[in-house]
Amino acid sequence: MNDEDRVKDDIRGRRLEKLRFWRRACAQESETLKLYNAEMAGNPLIFLHGDFEMGGFYVRRLAAECRYPIAALAPHGLDDPGLHPSIEWMARERVKDILAYRPAGPYRLGGYCNGALVAYECARLLKQQGGEVEFVLMIEPPALNTWPFYRRLHEAIGVTLATVERRSPAVQKVFGHLMNAFWNIGRTLHLPRDEIVRLIRTLARQYLKRAARTAETAPTEERRIRETSAALRSVYLAASAAYLPPPTTTPIVVLSTGLDHSGRRCGLYDGMQWQRLASSFRHVQLPGHHLTCLSDHAGALAANLAELLRDPVRVSAQMPAFRDRLNLTVVHRA
Image (tube, rainbow, N blue to C red; front, side, top):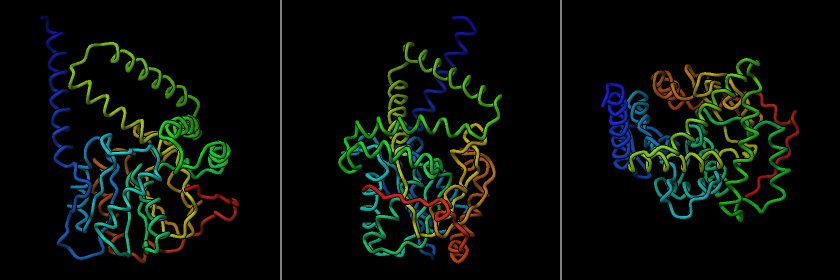
């Protein structure tokens, strides 16, 4: 074995050990509900962390620095019975967990990325059942779902299908990935031409690398972890892209960077767009990008959360929404 092969084997071994560590960590943290700072005073933030790969480890640091009670709810996994690639289904299931943990409100909900969408839908369901929701804190939620063109396109296609409640998982997944194709178009609208070309080349390289990985013989354990991660990513991508959030009167606070995981400014995480749907809205600009706001800049995120949670008046401060100017007449399909 030459030096180059030895280096490759060493890298592969370290990567596999890391995957084993995260699998053990996720198994240890696989409880649906994890409480942080439960002994502290305050109406707890029920937080849907949305991290289906690392078990929501980042919530530990947020809770430690925020020093406020947080009840973290995990996303669904492939072993969850009846798993459906829709935010509506996920929210219905998580509302059961919320009510089991806290039978009566008022509720403070929050979430990150796909978890933010589930939290938004949970708020709608809780209010529909007569519960009181103080506010929803949405960290880096996908925003293209709020664009008028996207919503009209969604309704035009969705009207040909059964309602979300009656739609089969297979049809919902195809619909979600179709809408994700429009996501990929919409997320590039703010990029300059050279950035669009660079993004297309990057996506092409990633596709070729995935094809090469499929062709190579990877260790069984590493391949199984990759396949599980890819399957979950596919479910949540379809669910998020297929979700049509209805307008709301619940106070909404969006904390966002406006940048994707590569640090590019894109429409997908333009948090200001959520004011289209909210009659009471506030936006907080976060440092970093979609991923580093949870790691390198977790301190800034925790400080903002602490301020908002301890001063709910700031959360519900009225900001002008322009929903009426857009004349959105969206009917939520249950």
